[in-house]
Image 1 (cartoon, rainbow, N blue to C red):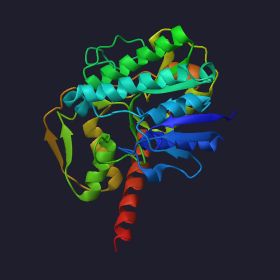
Image 2: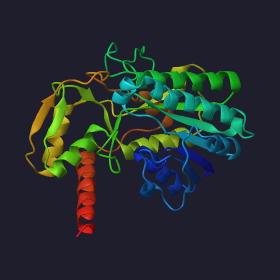
Image 3: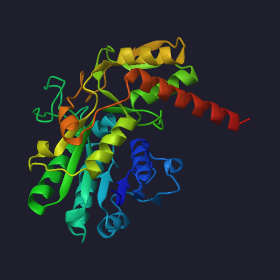
Length: 326
């Protein structure tokens, strides 16, 4: 099967890997990205690129008139801390922009034939009151505006499926890591640690370091997204019936992660501790049996292999940058 896909946020870390996966399968790929966090260098020549904010009228026009078989919506405000500091901004990007995209699909001539895949979160969606590992139907009490916004967007997807007949799917990602992640700004901890190791700076662990996360390699996430966008699916109408956890099912302590990266780098960088950050859960991991059963998907990259590969990528990139300055 091949067709036309639009990927919002396709110049970003996860989005660029999803773009690669669709191109490998012979799809016609278009990208919308404002490059606020994405990079133009991540966009392959084979994809058609539009530099717009996903909320812009031109972006809405492309969604409405593009005749897409699938839309993968990855564009987001993805920083939990920023959502705590500015929940209005977070809601504007993560709720209002998603609603605008869904409305554009609803009014398009291709509406009933377009599969809309939404990138949600399994890392913080379920909240501190839930005991991990969490299944999709776990009661949700999100502890950050970011997680609240993602859950609200999922309810909109369920509403548009139930009331307007749109074909919608939500993917609840664990903590995604891998090549192309930016070690600055809104990055995940693996990218930050890699950057600090290469700069010879101490690793900062917030809290006691025993907090756990479900770390999943970006190539496995790209494969799950491809399957969710292209497989024939018969889903229920409730919000959790249209959602899939995408992770490993294993919670790894941050301190253990830091030591694994130091071992992969073969260095003895010191680890420093800082106060726990508000809005971030102590423990997080997700059960992925629904994705195994329905999407016929399972993660293939072990954490040890994924961390080693990721550090090698960051090291090669740092060496290339240093060489270009000579």
